[in-house]
Image (cartoon, rainbow, N blue to C red; front, side):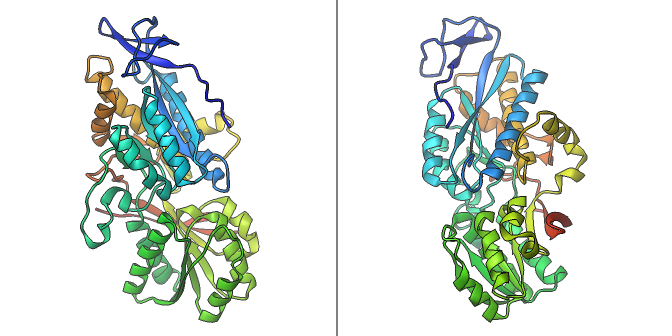
Length: 412
């Protein structure tokens, strides 16, 4: 685990300028009046699964946020401010995420947080951050209830936490998008729908099912699994006996890969389809290239390699020699981090070149109005804190790797 005994860098306002202080006594604002220097350090927290089965995605998120911070500092993008990234590992566990949220809130130099990956983890963090007026921007959460409330599906949309934002579009769009592709383009008609009972997986499977049946698709079976067991022989047999020609799985690749492998080993002639948490080379590894061939996954945004807006990010990421790939959410993590940087800039520029006493609350307010051209395209947020960039892509495993087959954009 990382060493937590870090040098404390705090802020003070003297003669109308920001000053940097080190190892001083902290006041309630994280400030100190005894330091010297020419700037202030602002910490951006990051929470993601940096170890465990989903660490491939989490490390891509961390590295991309790190790149954004390095870029801002190199460009001196916010005059007088140096950004620092503080990373915490939630291992995809809500309890760990809540503990990490509490730690980040306690560090008064933290003015924004990137993450988490999992919608279920986000649920455990939102109130902690909102009570502290600390902004949170996720590059990966897709459950609609996080921003639009528990009754969003019935049209009763209500934002619960003003400090919560995300750069990834939601499953209110992603699930139906998958259903439309599977029914209209892939010409499948009989679906067996499975989920892992988690916030993300169950929600995604539900939005797929609703649109699937509306289109005229037949649901020939449903099942819930424990993703930790890795023995899916019983449900594999059910799928085979159902006559399904497609399996939709609401869940993540650590279980999806073995599930797909076992379903096909059981003799079921099906295509497995899932959401953005299947869009990883790890899915193909776990399922096996033969079993995974032809399977589909939807993911947020357009293929990053095709975007002119991503060229600089791709080149800089490569130049930094990160050990891990940026994976599905790298561009969104960079943009999430940059949105916080933009908000800090707006607050500093609007306050005579210095941070106000209520900087956290002001950053939350500023982020609502942030708008810029990011790695993934236009970055801005609607009245719920959701991204206004509602593009999605279908990927298919071809010759052992995911390749894009269809992209689309959606209105409000």
